[in-house]
Amino acid sequence: MQTFSFDPVEMPPAAAKLRLEVRQFLTEHNAKRSALDRSQSWSGTDPEFSRKMGEAGLIGMVWPKKYGGHERTSFERYVMLEEMLVAGAPVAAHWIADRQSGPLLLRFGTEEQRQKYLPHVAAGKMFFCIGMSEPDSGSDLASVRSRAVKVDGGYRITGRKIWTSGAHTAHVMLGLFRTGANPDGRQEGLTQFLIDLRTVDGTDLKAKNNILVRPIRSLLGEYHFNEVVFEDSFVPDSAVVGKADNGWSQVMSELAFERSGPERYLSCIQLILEMIRELAINPTPAGLAAVGRLVAHLSTLRQMSVSVAAKLNAGLDPALEGSIVKDLGAVFEQETPTIAQAIFNVEPRTGKDASNLEQVLAFLMQNSVSYSMRGGTREILRGIIARGLGLR
Image 1 (cartoon, helix red, strand yellow):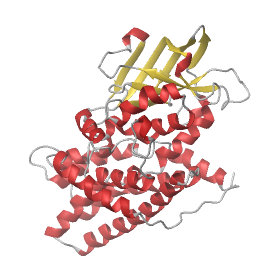
Image 2 (cartoon, one colour):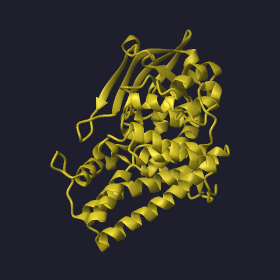
Image 3 (cartoon, one colour):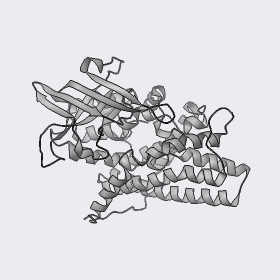
Image 4 (tube, helix red, strand yellow):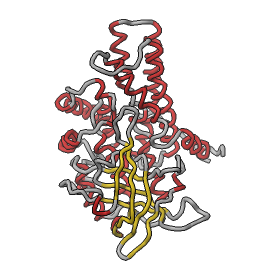
């Protein structure tokens, strides 16, 4: 049985100084994006913007300098993320590599792997995707069936991954595959691999290695999700991350980075900002009360999330706290569009004649349904929380 805590945290002076620098960067490189574009939050993709962030030292901020990092604190990185999300900056291209793949390699990767990948990631020139989920598995990650069979010099991979964000633009997949039989231990016999999809100079490696990326389109007709199919694809021994058959524990540590950041409560921030702008023109008691409650909830979630950042900065493992933040954040984000529609008596609309509030509402109304799935479904997270508290 575990206990959890969200201790009050005060940001250091260096974080406040960096906040001003990031705002200046955004003024120069993000000012012309529309309200609708900004509402994409961390799913917006712009490789050129990622490269500019790399040049400004805003990727790999906490990593060692010898890998292209900048050895800043987790608090400074947190401030940078807040500012990017509030500004609706297009950070999706490098997001996964910066958030979780890079830290995973720093903890479990070989020196060769760190030297090969991390400097390019920190420069905003190399993007990662995560190959965990599979068809017919739901959120049961331990049911992974895609296999990696040991052969001379490496492994042969066969199977499918689904809901793979950014696979169509990524250079590398960090994939989880079953390498052992282990009929009595589903969480055993899993291994993580670094699978090159293309090189930094743009050479496409997928076709050469029997890897097919298929788009999964959203209600809006666009896509960042993909299905990735492997047909006897070869990866060398040097692609194994950490220890073979130890992938489960590595993935669990990786998910702590994915579940607790500001992206877990700021996905609808553009809608809240549009609501505030609307109230500035036409204030109503019901509208002011509703936005006040939303801001209060957002402030509480932020304090909890910053507390998790402090634990990460101290080298602790806040997996339980991260799951709580993610679960509460998803509830908050999914409620926000419904509240906006009810309080402002406005319908989601698209097109040139629609207001910013209507366009942002339309985008988020259609996308927010996925917020309780990404990073772990509500049911899975609550199971983790219950188990951590000794309730099951």
